[in-house]
Length: 163
Length: 359
Image 1 (cartoon, rainbow over the protein chains, first blue to last red):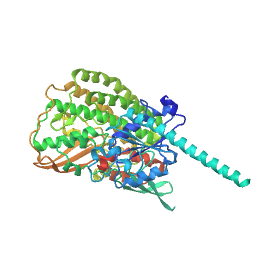
Image 2: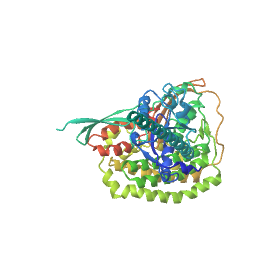
Image 3: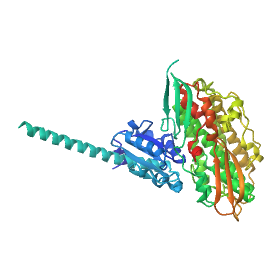
Image 4: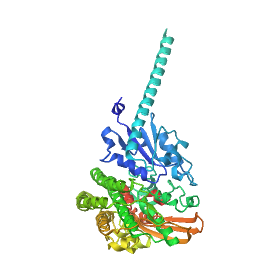
């Protein structure tokens, strides 16, 4: 199956800098600009967590942003996918021994895709987003399946009551 | 008088690529007071110096900020070289200058794009970033990394740029400058941009000086202070003049950066013309014992690395004062009387680099 076959919908991205050095963040932004231009696939960068399907997060977790990251994640509607960009978001990277770094993003929210690199290259980031898209479709199918099963069960129960 | 309300701005905000939090006290749509709070990306890099050997800390120094990474490495290396009395070869100085100016170019083009995005000029944002990619191509070609170069080390540089590549860079500069001037022309002369920026966030010369503003923010208010004038690395040989504007508004801050793009292209051209042959580094022997304040002009202003060693492999103290931290007091002065809709533009006009600030 080709990559484009995943793109049934236009996924919107929310980008947050947890405690990265900025290197990965400017590469995330570079993905949106003419050379890499992910917008041609319908991928749009939004500033609003309530509109977002994919959370792209860079950098590790520290004391102050712990609540912010959790809050952003919780505000995103289901189904949602988290992409941890750069080695800091995966493990803390070069900063893991710092006193204010608790580790990677997966310490507080579930991460679906890890994009390695310091700084992660735009090609890698796009690859990560594509991987995230298939996970997003799976989650959506599962949710739809669950909803349909629930609905069928409800209808069956109703039919049982009326007889 | 209308009722005062407080609007939280950040840490996550559509125009901010990085988290900073401002509590904006408003009367109707007008800002009365802005109260900043930082710390969302604090990592504790100054303390990390106790766990890394002094030659290894260059890698950490580069990652204080991913945009001006190379210049952090230069600043740190210069500090150690000064403490240990290491004479860096001339070619290394020139290569450091060339890479520093390339970093400045990509940083300024990045900022111009973000600034255009901040004022709602999407097309200009895309144009700036497309131009920036050609600088990144050069950086990647010569150092191997797009944003983190890793070529600077204590005692010199790690890689050479061959004569052929230098000649190619030199040839590419003319068409690149033409494209930059096309782009700069929009920032400097377009009516839309002028209406949006002129008279916004004005800071006078005395106030800028008193509040300790640095870099383009200070130079836009008429403070002719550019650390490159002191002639570190190869700047002394290149005949550098700082770019100064006098009006002190957002337009002036934008103009300073546009003109610094031209100045950087000039500096790279002269550095390539004059670069001497010779070794790239000297062997580092012994350990640093002593202290030094190392200063370098970054795209955002002057960065200070204070380093102290006690003769062991690990330094005992590093203090890093970055330009954005110095510019936050002046930002707090700029915001009152601005409209709420102008806040993103004013905040972006100091070119905030939060990961630098919080280290």
